[in-house]
Length: 236
Length: 361
Image (cartoon, rainbow over all chains, first blue to last red; front, side):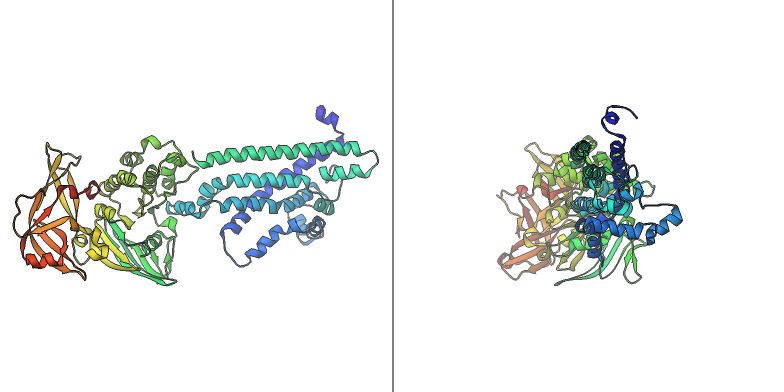
């Protein structure tokens, strides 16, 4: 691949950027449905053990990332109970693969995503959902036609927040899937590696600039999408 | 179609225990706030499950706690118009109107065009709810409920959040709804003016119990019920028909009791109306008075006298085929020597009848 970007970046650097984007994209997209579901349950249902679920969701925010990474390793590693099962049944391997980096990023970003979406759901007047029910809409339809369109700003905010968090995830990722160039070496891991070798400052600095650019872009995008959605929903 | 309701539900410090039937037409649930009206209507809608109860429309059981039947709200097929319109803000007026049609089983029901025309919301169709006035929102909400092909319409104080001008704007639409569709309406209100104009059946609630239930005209002309609906608000509703528009701005009406002159009513001759005559505006006289400014003097016969605990008395009169109610003092009743069967004259000032007391049939 040639072009201004590939010339400016070395293949290793370029691979790290591309891998980070891929990891963050899949981590966000695949965890979004779960995030919406968990946020909905936490916002609207009352059940025993709700505080336990809430605690579990928020755990990665509070635990040292190394601990989260280690827990992922012993659970989703090839010899771990879940990892072993997934490899046998579906050929899905997380350990030392980019898929593992995506899993670690998704777990670490999950609390932020759920918080943003939950706030959106709590702002929706349940009376509108009741009205939809009296008009003949069963619960899934109420969710799809009333709740989901109204929480869209929260969903967008949650997704972008999660994406940004996934881009920056370091501790859990390096603990769970190590730091293999082209496999699991994401942007932060690459910056860390370059800083470990003499003369790597320049390379690290280029990646730092890219990190800042991606973060700014994500932020602007979320503002813009959020405002467009809010305008549509305000109903004027 | 008849709705049958029987409920028992205990709240902290308040027990609801009601049973009534709502036949075709408008059944008004009338009572002070806190009397349990909204609880009843929410239970009918399925938004609240009572401790014990049975609710059915014709032969379909919506709820029966004895047999553990409880249809969820979306399967009850009842259109609900809330006090705050609850339109979906992210949908256009057209999409709001058609929302319930998506889920309704195919059938005839009222056609969308007809609903739009009846409610006068044609120009609003492509707008968003956020750009509508309170009165417009409520008309759209009524249309939305009606287009879901409901077996029954539920309305919880649909006018309470509106000012008088907006109320006057919507009442005629509700009258048309009552008279031009055959969907029964359960109408919750604490405003006697609305109830007197709309109700065909009246259920009076107080502290979670049914005080009175029956035909609206019968209860409104019943001196026993008057204290229960509020003495100042008491008054009979009588049918009338426009006879002619007079040159001096008055409108002459035919009633079974005789002609009635009222301030101008904008409607074509022969239009059928229902006129609410406040009991406190009716003056009684044993002889036909002369030299009196009041224009309406109707011959009547006393059918019932109810003496109040205070200085007041309520007198029910038969005038033609209709019943009137007069609120006078106990002293006047004695001085006039009124008793059941006494012939007298009921006198009514033309200007005592306000526009809001005149409803269409």
